[in-house]
Length: 128
Ligand SMILES: Cc1cc2nc3c(=O)[nH]c(=O)nc-3n(C[C@H](O)[C@H](O)[C@H](O)COP(=O)(O)O)c2cc1C
View (cartoon, protein in one colour):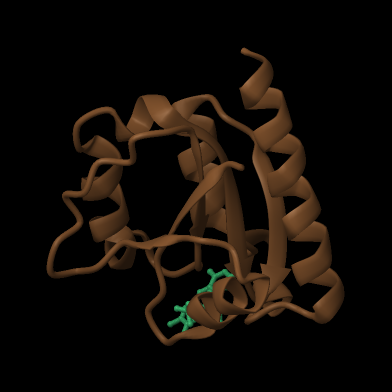
């Protein structure tokens, strides 16, 4: 099963992750320097770029950028073309796909579909 790392500022992404009941590492402002020891999916909310600095520090640490296999973005569609822009930028910058998006803490359908995506990615990485 693919590992997950996530970041949350007001708790919506945290609630989404909690609802999936999947094991996940929370990137914190206090210590973003944690090495993921296996391929993982990054789940990030969307804000002005500087708000996501702990995530950038995390990605720059040890092998974290190499282990990343996909990014999921949490956001709010009212932001129109800025919807999940951080997830898109990180994915593009590191050459991995945006594998999922959801608003706020996700609907029950989002939770179900995200779990499917993670499972499929896990199966793919297991074949390598
Ligand atoms: C100041 C502010 C700026 C935001 N900017 C964006 C944005 O540009 N695009 C987007 O899709 N969502 C944006 N959002 C919505 C949040 O990404 C969304 O509510 C998310 O679920 C918050 O996750 P968190 O509670 O885990 O921090 C913004 C929210 C706030 C409060």
